[in-house]
Length: 83
Image (cartoon, rainbow, N blue to C red; front, side, top):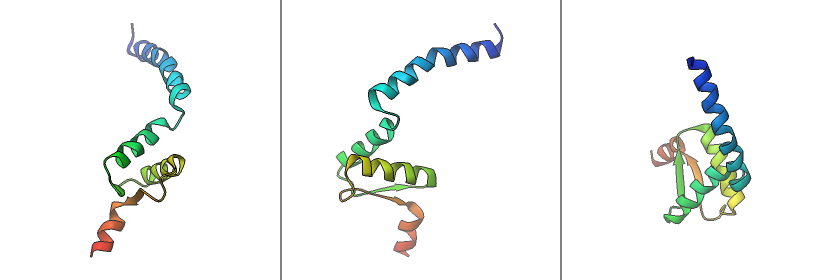
């Protein structure tokens, strides 16, 4: 079996798992789960260093209805505010 064939086999094997994950948890389930975990720690601010993560996690906060309880902020904003 060539490397390409083995990669394709792995992809085909994982594809049903991916769709099952979407059906059970929704396409954005992982990030929403991360927000619930962060909120569960008692944190009021979740600091991120990636602009894409900032947007995705802000959307997850809104989807979970935690806008008044948990804020997602860029770490650069936090550092700038402290200086």
